[in-house]
Length: 456
Picture 1 (tube, one colour):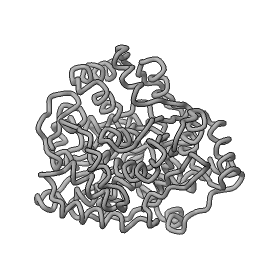
Picture 2 (picture 1 turned 90 degrees about the horizontal axis):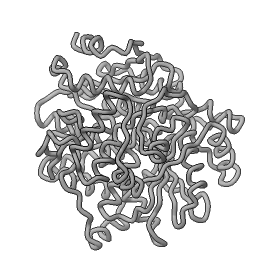
Picture 3 (picture 1 turned 180 degrees about the vertical axis):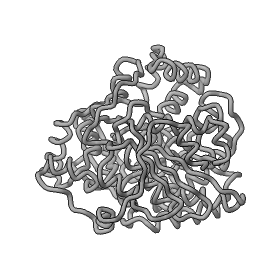
Picture 4 (picture 1 turned 180 degrees about the horizontal axis):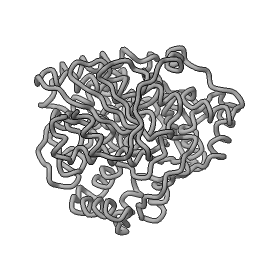
């Protein structure tokens, strides 16, 4: 399988180069040159397979001829050995037609582990095979940085640089990033919001002077992240589809998680309707309502991982929806960079609306949903997951519906206490980070200065 850029310049890359580069040289995102649905026999061959087997097969499909199946199998086995639940991504029934998919049983108790633990293994093994060293650079609104640091800490072929918005992540999220003692992990708190951090990462990738760093990205701009996340939609949809396609409601920031569900649907797995939920930073619901993508000031909320204005993976969603029209993608992305907004033509907007819907959930609605979930189902939701539970109630989908649980509630103690009057139970494996020494630097939003620091 070959990969092309959403903006049309880069063509013919293989999975190994996509894995180790992250961002396409033209500033676009890598996507497969073809995506075809499986036959019904192929779909059936995935039924009743365990999570690890599904992961090996799906990743193998997208890396065929580039990364060996032996490397994939070893990477999946090593990564999943660090998860805390035998089912990996257990499904918990909330009511007759609604389930919670708990994606917080990895090392950092967030859904980002489900991709980054595997990607960490793949990148380290591929670099060793090629005799190379790389610098992983990661912008985070909270959970990605912790998961990336955990996935790459102590590895011999990789340095890790994490950028997070200063004062805009939870204490637990920050400490998970900044308390690792490994010398190959560096953390920077940027005076700005997540979009500033993300912009700095993209600017470094486009900066020739940063070439000696041999940068690669593990944000969800890296296609390997999307494929690893596709696995839990394949796995869960096959378990719940006896009465029809499975609908998913996904808390959404950078759009990678819900995009992975769409990839599973494109491949022919029984994925039904897809709805994203957001908090007060409602750029995506506003877009689906009006057709205009517009960056506004980021509002600090109880669900900081969704405090995002520009979702990088939306570029891939647009490319897929409009049939790979790279000229239109490149044009709107340039307009967004130049003017901070763009408006899609009606036909393209309608194609996106056929694939996704969107619901915004405010602070009080999220807190009320957390209280209701505990009362009705004896479950404590993190504030991000609460936005999806709220959206699922509003949607009223027929058939099985999955609320995607993106983080353990203990990572967001303030929100849980506001909703329930007491903190969530702290997992024993998470408690030590609250006492460990932190290591990070507060920096200005200055990409040149960061580059010089990293090169120095």
